[in-house]
Image 1 (cartoon, protein in one colour):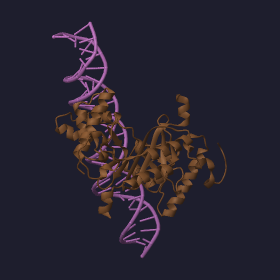
Image 2 (cartoon, rainbow over the protein chains, first blue to last red; image 1 turned 180 degrees about the horizontal axis):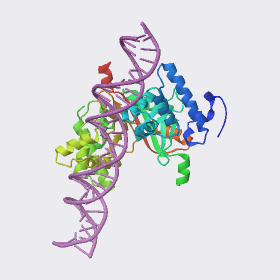
Image 3 (cartoon, rainbow over the protein chains, first blue to last red; image 1 turned 90 degrees about the horizontal axis):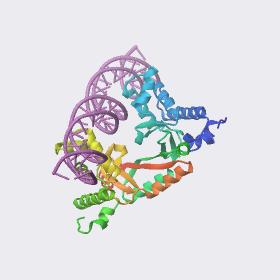
Image 4 (cartoon, rainbow over the protein chains, first blue to last red; image 1 turned 120 degrees about the horizontal axis):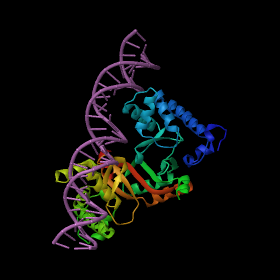
Length: 173
Length: 173
DNA sequence: TATATGAATGTAATATCATAACAGGTCAAG
DNA sequence: CTTGACCTGTTATGATATTACATTCATATA
C-alpha cells in the first residue's frame, strides 16, 4: 500500500489495524510527526531536539521500545546517556498524547493519531512484538458503566491485549 | 456488615464492590482461602506453606502488594529472603487463578472469587490504594470485537482503571 | 523400608526498569 | 543584559525481576 495524498485524511493511517498491515510507513511516520508539531505548538510546549528525536525513534516501527533502548539510540547520537534523558523525553511525549506507555511491556510506543480524541486499547503480538492501537470506545464505555455501578470514578484506564496478530497467526499455525 | 452463613453463597463476598464497602473481612478471606484449597486440590497442584502464606498475606487487605513487600513478610516469618521465593509463589497463585497481577502497580492482589469463571477488571483507588475486582465481561466482549475486526486473536487481556473509590471521592471533594 | 524421581525451596549473583537530587546551559520576556 | 523558567546532563541510588544452581522434600515404587 503506497499512496499519495493529503496527510489528514489518509484512510490507511486512520485504520486501526495499521500496525498489522502493509502501508506507506514513511508517510505514516511523517504524518504523525507533523501532527506532533501542530499539537505541541498549539499547547505552547516545546518539541526540542531530544524530544523530537525520541518521537522519531518510536515512529520507526509499530513496536514498543523500552526506555533503555531509546536511551541507547540517543547516546549513540550524541545526546546524554543517562536514564533521565530518555525517561524525561518519554514522559513529555506521553503527557502530550504523542506516545503511549504499554504497561504490560514496560515500554513506549508512538501514538499513530496524535491530536485526535481517542480512547486507545493496545493489541500486542506476542510473536512479532507489533503493537497496534485499536479503538477502545465501546470497551471503555462498558468499563465506565461497571465502575459507575459501584461508585468508582475512573480517571485513567489501561486496556491492553496480548495475543497473535493476523500475520503471526497465519505463520505459526 | 457482619453475618453468618454458608461460604459459597455470600452475597457480600460476591458483590463486585467488595473492596470498597464494609464487610466481614475475616469471613471473606477465609472463604477465598477455602476456595483456594478446593481449586488447587482439584487441579492436582500443591498449596504448600509458602504459597498458602503468600495468599493469606494478600488476603489481609483489598490492596495490591509488591513482591518485595510480600518477601519482607515471608523473611520475617522464617521463609527464604531472596526475591525468587516471593516471585515463585506469586507466579503460582496467578497461574492457578488465586491472585492477579496489577500491571499498573507492578503488584499483586488476591482473587476474591477463585474458581469461578470471571473476566476481571481492576478498579484502583489512587488515594487509598484499594483494589476492587469488577466485572469486565461486557468490556472484554467489546475488546474482543475490536480485535476480531482486525484479525487479532486475544489470549490474555489487561483491563485496569485508576481513579477514586466512593469513600475517597467523598472525603477528598 | 530403601531409594529413585520430580517438584519445591533456598541462595547468590545479576539484569532490568525507574527516580531523586543537583549542576549547568539555553532562551525569551522584561 | 539580566532574570527566571525550562530544559538537559550527570551522579547516585532505588525498585522490580530473572537466571542459575544447590539443597531439601514428597511421594511413588521396587
